[in-house]
Each structure stands twice: as structure tokens, then as C-alpha cells.
Image 1 (cartoon, rainbow, N blue to C red):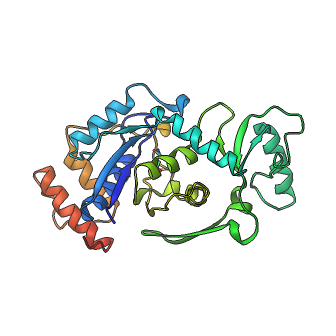
Image 2: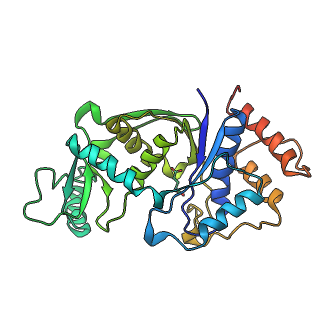
Image 3: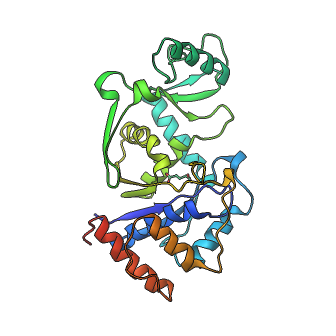
Length: 294
Ligand code: GLU
């Protein structure tokens, strides 16, 4: 196997400490495996994309010494591939159009909640649109045992999710005409032959959906590793939305040591004077912690 990893930032603002931790973890894992490390700009979510943020993130990664092995991939240029994947699923009758509004779904979930049953999408449009206009496209999830997806996360251990009871049929093409993250990420990782995904634990909840989608599309499932997310003083995930500050590009080593500490890496001393020196000891510490034998 030729290791291929990636970092896939959403350009909704400059790189902040939380995303640096994900970038560093994926970079160190690729280095520890002597593999390739790629960058993908997830600019598929039009409304959330901030002009200039992608270029800013790419420049910061360069200044921090994380150099991608191939030119970055931009999701906004790959919409034809997402359409092909949806067509493939449509031919296999695995997707269906959904006419439910958010309010209708919320109301039916409230109902379900009151009955103490599932909070998953109740499958209202599975049997047809009942005269409503199509808004989104959903992937039909299986029932029974086939709905249970299990995977072994390299950091968090065994994970199990029941797609039928915990998620329900999920959206691949949104009502606002945007491609859903779940579809884009699976198609992109497969097309780039990604073998290992290293990212923040906030995405753990999406992984079972992505594995099921891989099965439906007939593509390979990579190994997963979800690193603990960085939280603010209120215990919320650090994000551009809750005001995480951009990294100080003049002091990459300071931020990198803090990110390594967050990952629990034992670097001995914090006296590296160059990025190469830092990455040398951080890669060794990562390889030891994650039991990577290159
Ligand atoms: N673009 C996603 C984010 O910034 C990451 C997607 C992924 O790594 O799968 O949260």
C-alpha cells in the first residue's frame, strides 16, 4: 500500500489553532508512514466560503513548512464528478428526491421525540413526493443489521453507528442546490486514492455515513483517525464561527509546539530552532504514539 493522506480545510476564514492541529496530525501521520500528503480546499459550500480564505490557508501551511506533494484540489471545480456519483446512485435506485422543508422535518421529529422514538429523518419521501416539489436528494439507508456501521478508529477505538435509527436517509444534494459535504468528501477521497484520513473528532459522527456511501459507490474505505478537537473556554469546538483567532504566521514554531502538546506528543524539549528540527522530533513522537512502523 502506498500511503496517501490529506488535509481538507473549508475556506470559511484563515487557519486557526483548531485547524492547525488537524493539519499537523495528518502531516505527521503521512511523514511517519513516508507517504504523500495532499491538500483539498473544501469550497463547495458557497454561502460559507470567504473570498481569499483559501489562498490565505495555503500560504500559512507553506509558511509553517507543511508542503503538499501535489497541487491542491478545489472542490468547486469538481461538481461534474459529484453529479456523476449522484447519477450512479440514481441508476442503482439508492437515492430519491425529497420535498420536505426543514420545518416539516422538525415537526415530525418533535412528534417522534415526544413518543421517545428516533430523531433520524423519518423517510417521509421514500415512497414518493406526494405532489410536493423535489428540494433535495437523499440516500436511502438500509434497515436492520445492515444499518449498523462499525469501524476501528486509530485514536478513538471501535465506533458503531446505526444509520437507520441515528441518522436516517441523508442528504447528498441540498435544497439550496449545493452538493452536500458527505458526497463531495467521499468522491474526492476516492478519486485521490486516499488511504488514511486524519481529521478532527467533530467529524467522527459523519464517518459511518461516509463508509456506507463508499459501499454504495463501490470505492475503498480508508483508515480513519480522529484527533481530539480544540475547545474554547466554554467547551465549544474552536471554529471560525465562534471567533477563533488566526495564527500568527511570524511565530510558526510557537503554534506548532502548542499543537503538538494538544496531540499529547512528547518532544523532550521545546527548543527546536528550525521547522525541520521540530518536524523531525514530532514525527518520531507521533510514530511512537500511534505505533507507526514505516
Ligand atoms: N472541510 C472539513 C472541515 O474543515 C473537513 C473535512 C474532512 O476532513 O473530511 O471541517
